[in-house]
Amino acid sequence: MTKIIMHGCNGHMGQTISRLAEGMADAEIVAGIDLTGEKRNDYPVFKSFEDCDVEADVIIDFSSANAIDGLLDHCEKSKVPLVLCTTGLDDKQLKRIEDVSEHVAVLRSANMSLGINTLFKLLESAAGVLAPAGFDMEIVEKHHNQKLDAPSGTAIVLADVLKATAGDDHYYVYDRSNVRQKRDPKEIGLSAVRGGTIVGEHEVIFAGEDEVITIKHTAYSKAVFGKGALEAAVFLAGKAPGLYNMQDVIKQRIDK
Image 1 (cartoon, helix red, strand yellow):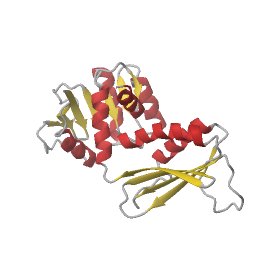
Image 2 (cartoon, rainbow, N blue to C red):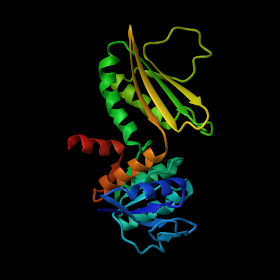
Image 3 (tube, helix red, strand yellow):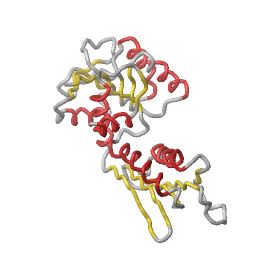
Image 4 (cartoon, rainbow, N blue to C red):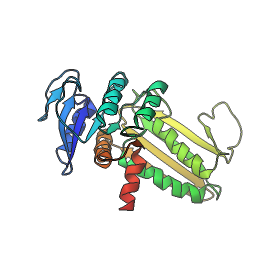
C-alpha cells in the first residue's frame, strides 16, 4: 500500500484525487496539506509540512506555482518522492526541480493522463512508418473557452514526438492564413479550437495518398489527470533519486 500526502488537497484536483484514491487497493491518502487547514476527507489536513507529523511514501502536488518552492525544499530535506502536477512554473523553478531530483525521486509530465502518454508511444510507431512514406502530419486540439494558451502544451509534446521520429528537418506551422502556397511535406501543422466546456481533445492526422489514419484522445473530465497522478505515485514510491515522467510509468506497464 502506497501512502500518499496530497499537497493542495482542498483544491478541485486535490478533491478529485482524494475520491479516486478511495477506490484503489494499492494507494491511500494519509494526510493533506492546504493553506485553509479545512478537513474535508477522512485524512488529517495540515496548513504546512512543518505542522504535518504523518509519514508517507510519496507526495502528490496539485497546488499553485507559488507553493512549489517550499514543497521542493521539503522534499529535498525529507527525501520523500514527489509527483509534481502543478503547471505554470518559471525557468528558475524548473531548474530547481532538476537540482532536487538529484537527491530525491521527482516525477513531472506535461500531461498526467495514462491515455495521452500511451498515445505518445503509439505515435512513435506510426510516425516511424508513415512519415518516410510521405504522409502529411497534422494535430488538431480542442479545449474549453477559458483556456489561455494555444496550442496546448500537450499538442506541442505530440508534435515533438512526431518530429523526433520523423526527423529534425520537420518544422511546426501554427497558422497558414497569411501564406498562399502548397503545403511543405516537412510541415507538422498544429491547429487550436476553443469553445464551451471541452475538457480536452487531441487528434493526430496522418494524411497520405488515398488513405488517412487518425489517432485521437478525448478527456471527458479532469479525473483522467488524477488517475494518472495516483498511478504515478504508486510507481514512484521507493524509486532512486532522479527526474521521471509518465513515459516511465507506461514503460513499466509494457515491460510487465
